[in-house]
Length: 146
Image (cartoon, rainbow, N blue to C red):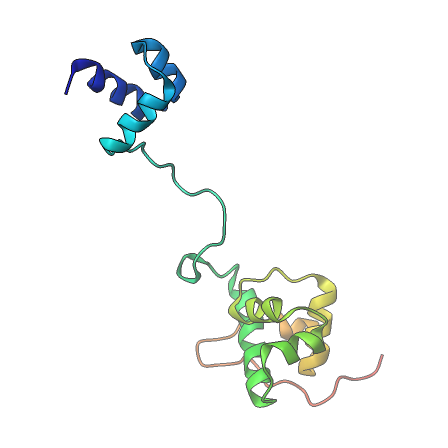
């Protein structure tokens, strides 16, 4: 391999374009492109900054979010509902209902009120974190009328 190949590869790794490398060494950009493919030159890859996170990389927003999710999950299982059915009852998508249950969803006040109505509890009770022994208090059968 000639010395200009080494210099061209060094420029390539530093993200110089094929045109820049070609003009420096008196070659056409297509020649530099072919050389890079023949010799398997690889540019360093950048870390991912966008796109979907894997489930393992996701973090629960807070213990309160997770507590609400656990309560929703218990209700969904007891009612033998799937995420689509629960989402329909809450006025959201299946994916949003799933993320709510996992603690990955940031609720609005309106959504929290709908969840409290669905679970037959009040907002204060819904937002009370779960204790290590289980639910802090059982949900009430019916909410008092205001």
